[in-house]
Image (cartoon, rainbow, N blue to C red; front, side, top):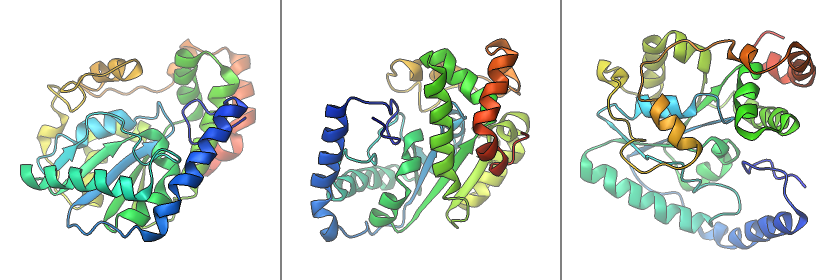
Length: 265
């Protein structure tokens, strides 16, 4: 059975029932949850995995005004917490931002692309940065990690279709991975302007990031090393992973969504 908001969205029936039972239970206090009153801007970087979300979060968190959360919290994921519990967690983040003199908190969990509506219920001051990447490179990268082509194609379609639902929202900015890697300074200036901040050249430094200041596991351990390096163009890497037949099949599946995102079909 399929739960699109989970990283591994194909689950057993028992997991499916458990997930939606938790969602129903956690929705009970929702009617009593009021938005968190704060002047701090909460920013969420989301999108399909392997689309540059970690890179964007790592660089933005080098800004002096931004407090980056150094791990994928999943705190807003469907079925995990009630809105009252989420509000309590966000209140703690807000406290630390104020304590350290930051006016923006930034968190990156790709699957929070499914949590936009939940964020609006608990935060009046929030913005989303949605990362996209061409389907062949994204799916090739996912395939190297998971080894299941159908899963990788489905995930790209599910996550990016959900992203497209947000493209006309005033508090949402779409950023292409290709733009970030080929014109990093220009792209980061545009992103920071969206957040209300001036660009700082130090954000492109290749020293410590928020991700090597905390212990990372599995895939994030790889990302920790990658995002600490200089940004370089990384287009058409799929040719080293996929056959011509695989690429044709993938494009036959993703063509409609890819076109809506502005990628060649």
